[in-house]
Image (tube, rainbow, N blue to C red; front, side):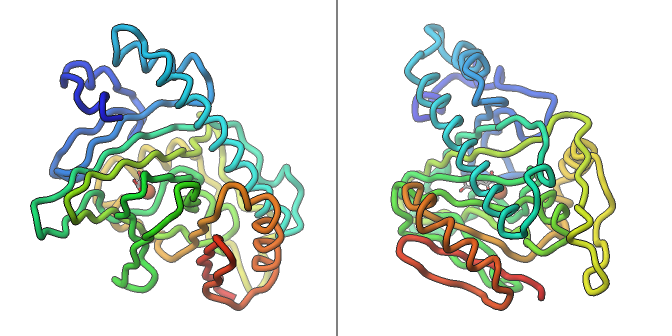
Length: 293
Ligand SMILES: O=C(O)CCC(=O)C(=O)O
Ligand SMILES: [Fe+2]
């Protein structure tokens, strides 16, 4: 990533895409003067990563391609695991959350602000992809809105922590039971922050539908079926919509990769099965969930 950021602008501009938030974004007023991000669509496919690397470096940087491809593949698996936990906790069939998608990997650098400053690195937003996994390089900065305008910073994450963020389409899928959290990046101190996020981007033509099991008298349908790509383009067509999309509220789940299988699954099942709770600590696992019932 450090090498990428040093590339000349003309080369970074080659990381372009017709899809929103898929390409290079340099420091700018709309996002943040501290933000730099690169995107690799379909990053669990080796050729996509190789194509990206060939655009960025004359020698194609095989080590970069191998690393990002491996990471993307594993993050994709981890995301599938979380989806399975969700489906299972609701007692649904796997089919109920099945879609064809690509994993978009974004590599981000947030530059440290001037001494003494506490400055935005990424404006507050909810995620438009179905779900997101984020890992960071030990420099904190990611904040979550837990109540109206009350933010908590996710700090001291272990190097093996991943943060799972529910996107607006996942909230729509389960009729608003899971909340898509409003989050942002705030920078202070003298160290730059690096993070990598894997986003689930359904293929063209995917319709997000709420299964009938989530719709009943006390919880009438909240969202119409919608075409993911239409929504995605619409959400990015105007930055204001991103900042205040009305999809606020919370669902945040952070857990250790290694423990996810054993303790994590168990715990998540238990917690999802019970309805009244706000937060819960268990070993390295932190869950922040807020159900409306
Ligand atoms: O870099 C991070 O920690 C968060 C990035 C993020 O929220 C996003 O790209 O949607
Ligand atoms: Fe985000």
